Length: 473
Image: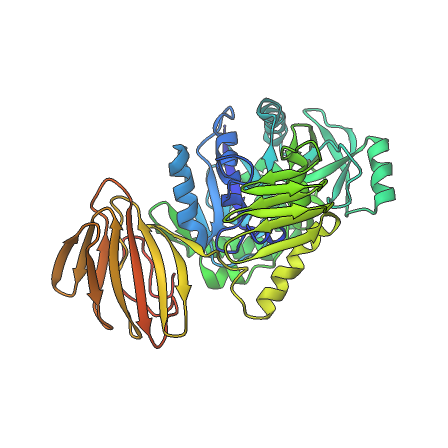
């Protein structure tokens, strides 16, 4: 019997805007330490007894981020299932279970990629308990032992003891008001719903067939038509879109009579908002959490974060201030959950600040826009050693590249050039071109674009090392 960790990495982390963006959400950010939440999750499952390399279910646009984050910490991984769109957790896990068809001994450990767990030993002990119950056919969830009356989480009421491990689930409860949450805390029978699950792959599919057969059939059809692309499995778009959008809780766990809850007291936090991040971040003598280049005078109980420039706060209380290159958030700590409404407004207005940062990551490296106007744009481009941009051309813009660090191999139509620092090349509109870093250090260039249209979708790819087409930016 083997445990297959399934890391769910489809969330956008909108309540941690402006640091978390749709193309680079919170699980891929080093919010507390040098490692990201995703990397911490990958390390957490590495030492589980009977554990296999983790499988990941993620948004297709995050596929290279996932691989890069595994490679940075040297953790082996299995398949990466690419969701063509979000359909919540029940269909995502169904696709993972279907991919293991014919392997009934596989136990899935399903967990979000963006949670914090401090006590690794306790977590692994609880997983070992859940494993035994899962082998007996139970559908296991892990309930967080509450430490305060929390209104932002759903709850699980535990029932009688299960003969193998944990407790039978008596009921799932929606987010309560504060008075009810206090009663739950005093009663001792209520646990926070963590969104971590464990079950045999076939048992999950059996229960899904009972309670949500449309999800079960859509997942099967989508995986039957999936396309293998190296480590990536591209789930079929049309068939996956036919699935109802539902969480595991609503689709299965609230209906099955085989639900078991394992209490987990391991320093868990879902880091769902800036106020939650402040709970686990270091504080100064005035109760402030200060990250980056921050000065605080006469300020108390604030979360102040500077990513690019000095942030100074004088005489303020209970504020969240987060500065990034293109946006600044100022919020009362008590309103931290409402940050997602700003993201919704940005989306409704057709703006881009919720989609990506000024610094944009690509599988070959990254770029940032330094300045732009109606007919020109200036970028700084960094290419990792050994990596290449695609062979491409543009219909509406010309480009001028200046090498400021490293060595560049450039293809310009039929010509090949080797440029070093302080050398440059001009690429007229319509020129087929390719940029490659043949060196051992990062290649850094300054790109000046000129033309009538400077959007990222003005690109025609002729070849690409990463399997991208012209619509995949």
